[in-house]
Length: 420
Image (cartoon, rainbow, N blue to C red; front, side, top):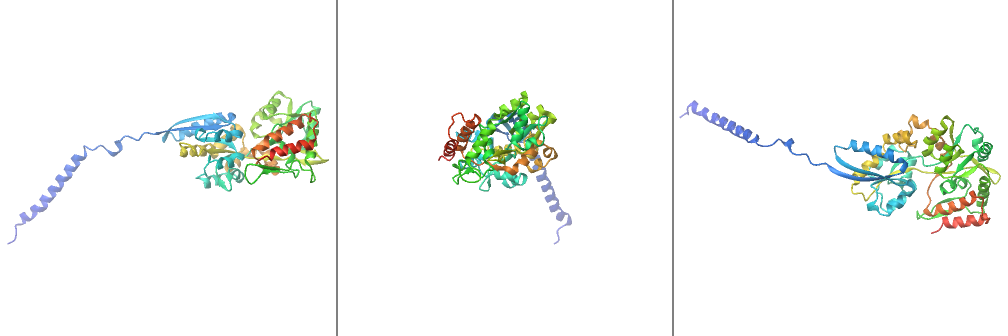
Protein backbone atom coordinates (compact mmCIF):
# COMPACT_ATOMS: atom_id res chain seq x y z
CA UNK A 1 0.00 0.00 0.00
CA UNK A 2 1.28 3.42 -0.85
CA UNK A 3 1.92 5.78 2.04
CA UNK A 4 -0.02 9.04 2.01
CA UNK A 5 1.81 11.95 0.40
CA UNK A 6 1.42 13.99 3.60
CA UNK A 7 3.29 11.37 5.57
CA UNK A 8 6.10 11.34 3.04
CA UNK A 9 6.54 15.10 3.39
CA UNK A 10 6.82 14.97 7.20
CA UNK A 11 10.34 13.49 7.29
CA UNK A 12 11.99 16.24 5.25
CA UNK A 13 10.20 18.81 7.34
CA UNK A 14 11.34 17.20 10.56
CA UNK A 15 14.93 17.04 9.31
CA UNK A 16 14.79 20.70 8.33
CA UNK A 17 13.43 21.79 11.71
CA UNK A 18 16.05 19.70 13.51
CA UNK A 19 18.89 21.30 11.51
CA UNK A 20 17.57 24.78 12.20
CA UNK A 21 17.36 24.02 15.91
CA UNK A 22 20.98 22.82 16.01
CA UNK A 23 22.14 25.90 14.11
CA UNK A 24 20.30 28.24 16.51
CA UNK A 25 21.73 26.37 19.46
CA UNK A 26 25.27 26.68 18.15
CA UNK A 27 24.78 30.37 17.44
CA UNK A 28 23.45 30.95 20.93
CA UNK A 29 26.39 29.11 22.46
CA UNK A 30 28.81 31.14 20.32
CA UNK A 31 27.66 34.42 21.86
CA UNK A 32 29.30 33.37 25.12
CA UNK A 33 32.77 32.93 23.47
CA UNK A 34 35.00 36.08 23.41
CA UNK A 35 36.08 37.21 19.92
CA UNK A 36 39.51 35.90 18.96
CA UNK A 37 41.04 39.38 18.58
CA UNK A 38 40.00 40.46 22.05
CA UNK A 39 42.73 38.31 23.65
CA UNK A 40 45.42 40.44 25.40
CA UNK A 41 48.41 41.21 23.18
CA UNK A 42 51.70 39.67 24.30
CA UNK A 43 53.92 42.08 26.25
CA UNK A 44 56.75 43.68 24.24
CA UNK A 45 60.23 42.49 25.14
CA UNK A 46 62.68 44.84 26.79
CA UNK A 47 65.96 45.07 24.87
CA UNK A 48 69.07 46.40 26.62
CA UNK A 49 72.10 47.27 24.48
CA UNK A 50 75.38 49.10 25.04
CA UNK A 51 77.06 50.96 22.17
CA UNK A 52 80.70 52.09 22.07
CA UNK A 53 81.87 54.87 19.78
CA UNK A 54 84.44 57.64 19.55
CA UNK A 55 83.71 60.48 21.95
CA UNK A 56 83.36 63.00 19.12
CA UNK A 57 80.81 60.69 17.46
CA UNK A 58 78.46 60.40 20.45
CA UNK A 59 75.98 63.14 19.42
CA UNK A 60 75.56 61.51 16.01
CA UNK A 61 75.27 58.03 17.52
CA UNK A 62 72.61 59.24 19.94
CA UNK A 63 70.64 60.65 17.01
CA UNK A 64 70.90 57.36 15.10
CA UNK A 65 69.92 55.37 18.17
CA UNK A 66 66.83 57.56 18.66
CA UNK A 67 65.72 56.95 15.08
CA UNK A 68 66.35 53.21 15.50
CA UNK A 69 64.18 53.09 18.61
CA UNK A 70 61.42 54.98 16.83
CA UNK A 71 61.55 52.60 13.86
CA UNK A 72 61.23 49.47 16.02
CA UNK A 73 59.08 50.89 18.84
CA UNK A 74 56.24 48.49 18.03
CA UNK A 75 58.51 45.47 18.48
CA UNK A 76 60.39 46.18 21.69
CA UNK A 77 61.03 48.57 24.55
CA UNK A 78 64.66 49.68 24.30
CA UNK A 79 67.25 50.60 26.88
CA UNK A 80 70.26 51.61 24.82
CA UNK A 81 73.32 53.17 26.44
CA UNK A 82 75.98 54.96 24.38
CA UNK A 83 79.48 55.17 25.86
CA UNK A 84 82.75 56.76 24.63
CA UNK A 85 85.48 54.35 23.58
CA UNK A 86 88.42 55.09 21.32
CA UNK A 87 88.18 53.19 18.05
CA UNK A 88 91.95 52.63 18.04
CA UNK A 89 91.91 50.80 21.40
CA UNK A 90 88.49 49.15 21.16
CA UNK A 91 89.97 45.67 20.72
CA UNK A 92 91.91 45.84 23.97
CA UNK A 93 88.93 47.14 25.92
CA UNK A 94 86.61 44.51 24.47
CA UNK A 95 88.89 41.51 24.86
CA UNK A 96 89.42 42.41 28.51
CA UNK A 97 85.93 41.02 29.17
CA UNK A 98 83.88 40.03 26.14
CA UNK A 99 80.71 39.25 28.08
CA UNK A 100 80.75 42.64 29.79
CA UNK A 101 81.74 44.50 26.62
CA UNK A 102 79.53 46.57 24.34
CA UNK A 103 76.91 44.84 22.18
CA UNK A 104 77.73 47.15 19.27
CA UNK A 105 81.06 48.91 18.84
CA UNK A 106 83.09 51.02 16.39
CA UNK A 107 86.69 50.04 15.71
CA UNK A 108 89.54 50.49 13.23
CA UNK A 109 89.81 47.79 10.57
CA UNK A 110 93.29 46.64 11.60
CA UNK A 111 91.70 45.01 14.66
CA UNK A 112 89.24 42.80 12.77
CA UNK A 113 91.49 39.74 12.51
CA UNK A 114 92.28 39.70 16.23
CA UNK A 115 88.63 40.21 17.19
CA UNK A 116 87.50 37.41 14.88
CA UNK A 117 90.22 35.08 16.16
CA UNK A 118 89.18 35.78 19.76
CA UNK A 119 85.56 34.94 18.98
CA UNK A 120 84.33 38.49 19.56
CA UNK A 121 82.93 38.62 16.03
CA UNK A 122 80.97 36.01 14.10
CA UNK A 123 80.70 35.96 10.29
CA UNK A 124 77.84 38.20 9.16
CA UNK A 125 74.64 36.35 8.32
CA UNK A 126 73.68 39.03 5.78
CA UNK A 127 77.15 39.17 4.21
CA UNK A 128 75.80 39.16 0.65
CA UNK A 129 73.65 42.23 1.24
CA UNK A 130 76.46 44.11 2.97
CA UNK A 131 78.94 43.27 0.20
CA UNK A 132 76.54 44.47 -2.49
CA UNK A 133 75.96 47.79 -0.71
CA UNK A 134 79.59 48.62 0.19
CA UNK A 135 82.77 49.73 -1.56
CA UNK A 136 84.99 46.75 -2.36
CA UNK A 137 87.96 48.22 -0.45
CA UNK A 138 85.77 48.59 2.65
CA UNK A 139 84.54 45.00 2.32
CA UNK A 140 88.14 43.79 2.10
CA UNK A 141 89.03 45.80 5.20
CA UNK A 142 86.14 44.21 7.13
CA UNK A 143 87.04 40.67 6.08
CA UNK A 144 89.44 37.96 7.23
CA UNK A 145 90.46 35.42 4.59
CA UNK A 146 87.48 36.42 2.50
CA UNK A 147 84.91 36.10 5.29
CA UNK A 148 83.04 39.27 6.27
CA UNK A 149 83.01 39.87 10.03
CA UNK A 150 81.92 43.50 10.46
CA UNK A 151 79.81 46.25 8.91
CA UNK A 152 81.79 48.88 6.92
CA UNK A 153 81.19 52.38 8.31
CA UNK A 154 83.70 54.71 6.63
CA UNK A 155 86.25 54.35 3.85
CA UNK A 156 88.31 57.39 4.78
CA UNK A 157 90.71 56.37 7.51
CA UNK A 158 93.75 57.88 5.84
CA UNK A 159 95.58 61.20 5.75
CA UNK A 160 96.50 63.94 3.31
CA UNK A 161 97.57 67.59 3.22
CA UNK A 162 95.52 70.53 4.49
CA UNK A 163 96.75 74.01 3.64
CA UNK A 164 95.59 77.61 3.83
CA UNK A 165 95.39 78.93 0.27
CA UNK A 166 96.13 82.47 1.45
CA UNK A 167 99.76 81.46 2.12
CA UNK A 168 100.63 78.88 -0.55
CA UNK A 169 100.68 78.58 -4.31
CA UNK A 170 99.72 75.38 -6.10
CA UNK A 171 103.43 74.84 -6.74
CA UNK A 172 104.32 75.26 -3.05
CA UNK A 173 102.10 72.38 -1.96
CA UNK A 174 103.66 69.87 -4.34
CA UNK A 175 106.79 69.45 -2.20
CA UNK A 176 107.47 69.48 1.52
CA UNK A 177 110.42 71.80 0.83
CA UNK A 178 108.03 74.30 -0.79
CA UNK A 179 105.55 74.08 2.07
CA UNK A 180 108.21 74.63 4.74
CA UNK A 181 109.81 77.54 2.88
CA UNK A 182 106.48 79.34 2.39
CA UNK A 183 105.43 78.74 6.01
CA UNK A 184 108.79 80.00 7.27
CA UNK A 185 108.47 83.21 5.22
CA UNK A 186 105.08 83.81 6.84
CA UNK A 187 106.39 83.06 10.33
CA UNK A 188 103.91 80.17 10.59
CA UNK A 189 104.06 76.40 11.05
CA UNK A 190 103.55 73.19 9.11
CA UNK A 191 102.41 70.42 11.48
CA UNK A 192 102.71 66.63 11.36
CA UNK A 193 102.45 64.11 14.18
CA UNK A 194 105.77 62.29 14.63
CA UNK A 195 104.65 60.75 17.93
CA UNK A 196 102.52 58.31 15.90
CA UNK A 197 103.93 55.53 13.76
CA UNK A 198 100.76 55.82 11.67
CA UNK A 199 101.95 59.13 10.21
CA UNK A 200 105.68 58.27 10.25
CA UNK A 201 104.98 55.50 7.74
CA UNK A 202 104.67 58.36 5.21
CA UNK A 203 108.47 58.63 4.94
CA UNK A 204 109.23 54.92 4.53
CA UNK A 205 106.28 53.68 2.48
CA UNK A 206 107.49 54.51 -1.05
CA UNK A 207 111.21 53.89 -0.58
CA UNK A 208 111.36 50.13 -1.12
CA UNK A 209 111.73 49.64 2.64
CA UNK A 210 108.97 47.41 3.99
CA UNK A 211 106.86 46.69 7.07
CA UNK A 212 103.93 44.34 7.53
CA UNK A 213 102.41 41.35 9.32
CA UNK A 214 103.92 37.90 9.31
CA UNK A 215 101.74 34.89 8.50
CA UNK A 216 100.93 34.42 12.20
CA UNK A 217 98.89 37.64 12.05
CA UNK A 218 100.55 38.97 15.19
CA UNK A 219 104.25 39.69 14.63
CA UNK A 220 105.85 42.03 12.11
CA UNK A 221 108.57 41.97 9.51
CA UNK A 222 110.43 45.26 8.92
CA UNK A 223 113.36 46.35 6.72
CA UNK A 224 113.42 50.02 7.68
CA UNK A 225 117.01 49.65 8.89
CA UNK A 226 118.23 48.14 5.61
CA UNK A 227 121.58 49.26 4.24
CA UNK A 228 120.88 47.81 0.79
CA UNK A 229 118.81 49.10 -2.11
CA UNK A 230 118.45 52.52 -3.75
CA UNK A 231 117.39 54.11 -0.47
CA UNK A 232 118.69 52.92 2.90
CA UNK A 233 117.08 53.43 6.28
CA UNK A 234 119.73 56.01 7.20
CA UNK A 235 118.78 58.07 4.12
CA UNK A 236 115.23 58.38 5.41
CA UNK A 237 116.41 59.22 8.92
CA UNK A 238 118.68 61.99 7.61
CA UNK A 239 115.80 63.38 5.54
CA UNK A 240 113.61 63.49 8.64
CA UNK A 241 116.32 65.35 10.56
CA UNK A 242 116.54 67.92 7.77
CA UNK A 243 112.78 68.45 7.90
CA UNK A 244 112.81 68.77 11.68
CA UNK A 245 115.52 71.44 11.43
CA UNK A 246 113.20 73.80 9.54
CA UNK A 247 111.92 76.67 11.72
CA UNK A 248 108.49 76.07 10.19
CA UNK A 249 108.23 72.41 11.20
CA UNK A 250 106.27 71.33 14.28
CA UNK A 251 105.55 67.79 15.43
CA UNK A 252 102.01 68.08 16.75
CA UNK A 253 99.24 65.62 17.53
CA UNK A 254 95.92 65.92 15.71
CA UNK A 255 94.46 67.91 18.59
CA UNK A 256 97.47 70.25 18.70
CA UNK A 257 97.36 70.69 14.93
CA UNK A 258 93.71 71.76 15.11
CA UNK A 259 94.46 74.11 18.01
CA UNK A 260 97.19 75.72 15.88
CA UNK A 261 94.76 76.15 12.99
CA UNK A 262 92.35 77.90 15.32
CA UNK A 263 94.92 80.24 16.88
CA UNK A 264 96.48 81.02 13.49
CA UNK A 265 99.95 79.60 14.16
CA UNK A 266 99.54 76.59 11.83
CA UNK A 267 98.78 77.15 8.14
CA UNK A 268 99.37 73.63 6.79
CA UNK A 269 99.49 70.11 8.12
CA UNK A 270 98.79 66.44 7.63
CA UNK A 271 95.56 64.99 9.00
CA UNK A 272 92.37 63.24 7.93
CA UNK A 273 88.75 63.93 7.01
CA UNK A 274 87.65 63.96 10.66
CA UNK A 275 89.10 67.49 10.93
CA UNK A 276 87.61 68.79 7.67
CA UNK A 277 84.55 70.46 9.19
CA UNK A 278 86.55 72.16 11.97
CA UNK A 279 89.23 73.43 9.58
CA UNK A 280 86.60 74.68 7.12
CA UNK A 281 85.03 76.70 9.93
CA UNK A 282 88.34 78.52 10.49
CA UNK A 283 89.78 78.89 6.98
CA UNK A 284 86.51 79.05 5.05
CA UNK A 285 87.03 79.33 1.29
CA UNK A 286 90.82 79.38 1.86
CA UNK A 287 90.81 75.74 2.97
CA UNK A 288 92.81 73.66 0.52
CA UNK A 289 93.33 69.90 0.49
CA UNK A 290 95.65 67.78 -1.65
CA UNK A 291 97.55 64.52 -1.73
CA UNK A 292 100.68 64.38 0.40
CA UNK A 293 103.69 66.24 -1.03
CA UNK A 294 107.01 64.75 -2.05
CA UNK A 295 110.04 65.11 0.24
CA UNK A 296 113.76 65.26 -0.43
CA UNK A 297 115.63 62.04 0.33
CA UNK A 298 119.11 61.16 -0.95
CA UNK A 299 118.95 64.01 -3.44
CA UNK A 300 115.65 62.97 -5.01
CA UNK A 301 111.96 63.65 -4.52
CA UNK A 302 110.06 60.76 -2.90
CA UNK A 303 106.26 60.76 -2.87
CA UNK A 304 105.05 60.55 0.73
CA UNK A 305 103.03 57.41 1.39
CA UNK A 306 100.14 56.83 3.77
CA UNK A 307 98.38 54.12 5.69
CA UNK A 308 94.75 53.69 4.70
CA UNK A 309 91.86 51.95 6.33
CA UNK A 310 88.22 51.95 7.31
CA UNK A 311 86.16 52.29 10.42
CA UNK A 312 83.89 49.35 11.09
CA UNK A 313 80.92 48.49 13.31
CA UNK A 314 80.94 45.15 15.08
CA UNK A 315 78.19 43.17 16.79
CA UNK A 316 79.52 41.33 19.85
CA UNK A 317 79.22 37.56 19.45
CA UNK A 318 78.69 37.39 23.22
CA UNK A 319 75.74 39.81 23.23
CA UNK A 320 72.63 38.75 25.12
CA UNK A 321 70.61 40.28 22.27
CA UNK A 322 72.49 39.13 19.14
CA UNK A 323 69.61 39.75 16.71
CA UNK A 324 69.01 43.29 17.95
CA UNK A 325 72.74 44.02 18.11
CA UNK A 326 73.02 43.06 14.44
CA UNK A 327 69.98 45.17 13.55
CA UNK A 328 71.45 48.21 15.29
CA UNK A 329 74.83 47.70 13.59
CA UNK A 330 73.02 47.58 10.23
CA UNK A 331 71.11 50.75 11.10
CA UNK A 332 74.24 52.70 12.07
CA UNK A 333 75.90 51.70 8.78
CA UNK A 334 72.90 52.10 6.46
CA UNK A 335 73.07 54.38 3.42
CA UNK A 336 70.92 57.03 5.13
CA UNK A 337 73.02 56.93 8.30
CA UNK A 338 76.29 57.22 6.36
CA UNK A 339 74.92 60.21 4.43
CA UNK A 340 74.07 61.85 7.74
CA UNK A 341 77.55 61.03 9.06
CA UNK A 342 79.12 62.79 6.08
CA UNK A 343 76.89 65.85 6.55
CA UNK A 344 77.63 66.16 10.26
CA UNK A 345 81.17 64.77 10.56
CA UNK A 346 82.57 65.05 7.02
CA UNK A 347 83.50 61.36 7.03
CA UNK A 348 83.69 59.44 3.75
CA UNK A 349 81.02 56.74 3.38
CA UNK A 350 81.79 53.06 2.88
CA UNK A 351 78.32 52.63 1.37
CA UNK A 352 78.61 52.73 -2.43
CA UNK A 353 75.49 54.81 -3.06
CA UNK A 354 76.34 57.34 -0.35
CA UNK A 355 79.94 57.61 -1.60
CA UNK A 356 78.72 58.30 -5.14
CA UNK A 357 76.43 61.15 -4.04
CA UNK A 358 77.10 64.62 -5.42
CA UNK A 359 77.77 66.18 -2.01
CA UNK A 360 80.47 63.61 -1.21
CA UNK A 361 82.09 63.92 -4.62
CA UNK A 362 82.32 67.71 -4.18
CA UNK A 363 84.20 67.47 -0.87
CA UNK A 364 87.78 68.80 -1.12
CA UNK A 365 88.91 66.51 1.71
CA UNK A 366 87.45 63.39 0.12
CA UNK A 367 88.94 64.34 -3.25
CA UNK A 368 92.37 64.70 -1.63
CA UNK A 369 92.01 61.34 0.10
CA UNK A 370 91.11 59.68 -3.19
CA UNK A 371 94.11 61.33 -4.87
CA UNK A 372 96.38 60.04 -2.10
CA UNK A 373 94.91 56.53 -2.29
CA UNK A 374 97.26 55.75 -5.19
CA UNK A 375 100.13 56.01 -2.71
CA UNK A 376 98.51 54.32 0.27
CA UNK A 377 98.61 50.85 1.80
CA UNK A 378 95.99 49.14 3.96
CA UNK A 379 97.29 49.27 7.52
CA UNK A 380 98.24 45.78 8.64
CA UNK A 381 100.82 45.80 11.43
CA UNK A 382 101.03 44.09 14.80
CA UNK A 383 101.01 45.82 18.15
CA UNK A 384 104.81 45.94 18.47
CA UNK A 385 105.00 48.42 15.60
CA UNK A 386 103.81 51.53 17.39
CA UNK A 387 106.09 52.30 20.34
CA UNK A 388 109.49 51.66 18.69
CA UNK A 389 108.57 53.77 15.65
CA UNK A 390 107.21 56.54 17.85
CA UNK A 391 110.38 56.60 19.98
CA UNK A 392 112.57 56.78 16.88
CA UNK A 393 110.55 59.57 15.23
CA UNK A 394 110.32 61.64 18.43
CA UNK A 395 114.12 61.58 18.61
CA UNK A 396 114.30 62.78 14.99
CA UNK A 397 111.76 65.55 15.66
CA UNK A 398 113.96 66.76 18.51
CA UNK A 399 117.06 66.75 16.30
CA UNK A 400 118.59 63.53 17.64
CA UNK A 401 119.53 65.00 21.05
CA UNK A 402 121.38 61.85 22.15
CA UNK A 403 123.75 62.06 19.19
CA UNK A 404 123.51 58.28 18.81
CA UNK A 405 124.25 56.65 15.47
CA UNK A 406 121.23 56.76 13.19
CA UNK A 407 121.91 53.22 12.04
CA UNK A 408 122.03 52.05 15.66
CA UNK A 409 118.72 53.78 16.35
CA UNK A 410 117.15 52.21 13.26
CA UNK A 411 118.42 48.77 14.28
CA UNK A 412 116.97 49.25 17.77
CA UNK A 413 113.64 50.35 16.29
CA UNK A 414 113.41 47.36 13.96
CA UNK A 415 114.36 45.00 16.77
CA UNK A 416 111.38 46.29 18.74
CA UNK A 417 108.99 46.24 15.77
CA UNK A 418 109.84 42.61 14.91
CA UNK A 419 109.98 41.33 18.51
CA UNK A 420 108.09 38.06 19.08
